[in-house]
Length: 124
Image (cartoon, rainbow, N blue to C red; front, side):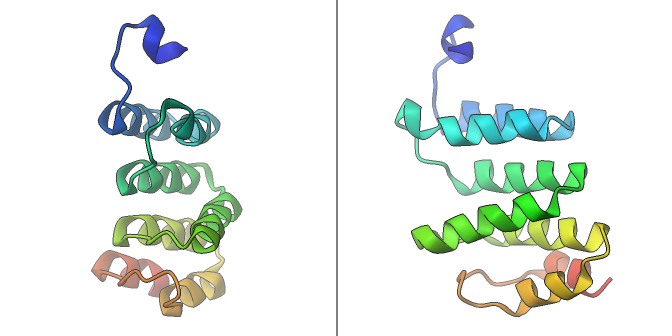
């Protein structure tokens, strides 16, 4: 494993940081791989990791993958935080899918309250 080969401890912070770095480097596929591998390390994906993956999708213009992640959370009854929801809304907005962005903004089944950033992304 990559983390073990570098003699790094595998925890939420380490994996979330790696996901964030991958997202900033436009390596959305690596960010997703790291996110999906968290359970293999017996580490539950947290909101930081999830929002980092959504942000990586946003930067790559992969709005459909961001929506898929939200659907997965809804099926698992996982609470989506404002940052993750905002990144998904912003990814839709950036590719002109404003109707989907507005639907996400109004949807309450994910139990996330939209913050000012999400609201601005939804109406821009």
